[in-house]
Image (cartoon, chains in turn yellow, cyan):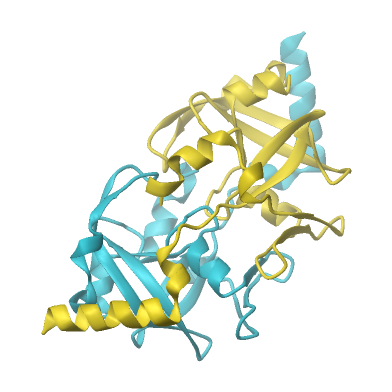
Length: 161
Length: 161
């Protein structure tokens, strides 16, 4: 009987929500940090905006890393935080926002825009219009389509939560 | 000279973005699953909507878990996925949405609303108005304030990314 219930439940889901069995494309936007183009992952579940060491080197901001903020990041396994860049210019659609970054040593993702920045700039993650809107500057930028996503995501997407 | 740059950068940040040194309160909403009240974490960085085994028992939906979808969840350490509930009624502000859940064995958080549901129901995470809006049903619900957050978050918040 349990098996029958489960099968009926799956059939109903397949009929009414067939897309729930597909994979979901994650949210990324184009931006620039210190003049260097970066694809940023939009994560309302992350407390802090972070950047990988590799990306920070490419953006030439490693000289600003304050090692007094070094530590260990939890929640995504355990990673070494090299320090914090307190303020750097983040450009989205030609509008500049001041952003702070925690710099993580080993991190496949270049940059993750976390809830600190999302809240500070009163952003709106709009999945109806498929854009990220920035309340404080009244600009918006569209989420990237599959072909524009960075390599690292496409490799792990299937197995990632 | 490097040290001076970093100090100047920190002073500027403290002057212009003092709130960037505080902790950020995460996003939760009130909802009901199968008639049982649950506080759901809103996470645009998660591909899948999940529920802990403890919470699934409380909501009386363990009988619907399809073990053919069992596996291992990566990305938040490694966790055992017990299976998938294909379709269950999720109530937000008296409006019902069909939702699927992956059930995780060891998970401190009761429920996490991931990008699959956020996209399917054209939701809008609005940090300007501090609400979650559901595009398909045209309803909205406010994000919970600090005193309403579940216990587990308040304990880990400081150290979590």
